[in-house]
Length: 524
Image 1 (cartoon, helix red, strand yellow):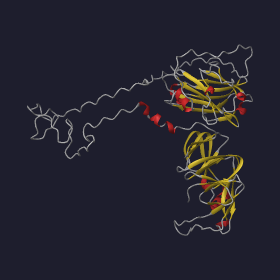
Image 2: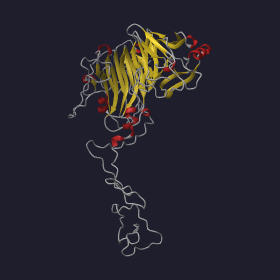
Image 3: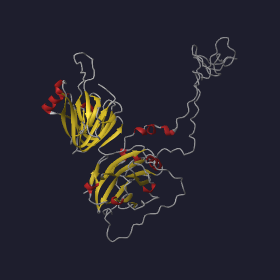
Image 4: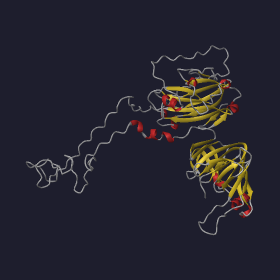
């Protein structure tokens, strides 16, 4: 039975199938729409550094045949054969995309899918429809990517541009247009027995009886290289004739134009004004070189069509799906949740979420509450569970995702934004004579998972040497192999006087080469 994926979900290929010879089918359609379905072979920087791995209708296979375009079959609009163990090491991701050829928008598409078939059995399916998009003309449907092992991600990310814009986004170059030649359909060899990668038999689905409502005709796009028509010239304001006036005396100005007593017959132009434009009494005159501030100012140039709101906001679009934790920007992190893998985050740090997410207070128990009160390292946490995405931030602090693979990391509680619940946490004390309570306290994270730390400003990572000293309020994190001790010359916080603070704790770090300490440019 195929495993159903939702947007943002990921899985190891080995959890879906033991095979490496995969069939990838994409089904997408819409009334009056034609689609180009392609595969981009990207390097570790997610760039198309070798254009031989851009697989589309005009280049149906990679040099070593590890990626092949098979054409429409078994109900799929387009299909590919991917042999994972033959893909060269410089190719780290295969991005499967669909773009509209011609006019149209992705909001017009009917329900579609991307599916993976292995050994003649469908093992994964990601379904989508037009309600997930608006004016986009392309969609990044799904990825096969290498992160220690090959994995699959259901992306579903819309893209405003067409195929050319998508190619440029991945670092490719758009070639000069040539006369179109009929694309050669890759020959499917005759076979008595279906190969391992072939899809299961699938009859064409009958058209639904109710049918999809006809999509509104898209607005005609301006032809490239032409100038949009100039807006119609504004009409003159309607003139006003005072009540009771039924005729214009000889020699008087036309109706609706006022001439003060003693003014010459005809239209009156005050000194310093432009003819035909009247400046009211007390209005400032124009400075040299400045347009007249009243009446008939300079007409604004028309707004170019490419400056619409979606284009302007493109640079702020949601970042493509990475792994479980994705840095959306320097101040915002996104966590992709599944029901069996919750996270813990600072209470009040959620700024947005998508999907079915539940937020609950994470109680630390009596011992945890006492420890937090005594050490200052207690945290008010919320537990985030469900399927979807959560966006987290804290007062526009910079955020960084630190991934642990069976490792340990020390932090201060004030520097933690969120972390995987699977990590073990423990409060540790750094011994020091003359300190309140006998020491300075920190948090130790252990296991496999991620910790999201936050800093005020851009931090610096210092290598631990023989004499590395850090203010306790500025330290964010340090490696588990570094030994932290308090210095003997300390100036303690004068808590008895309001708003009187000095250096609270100075720490000296010692350790073998390779250890580090992270410091923020901020003090409490």
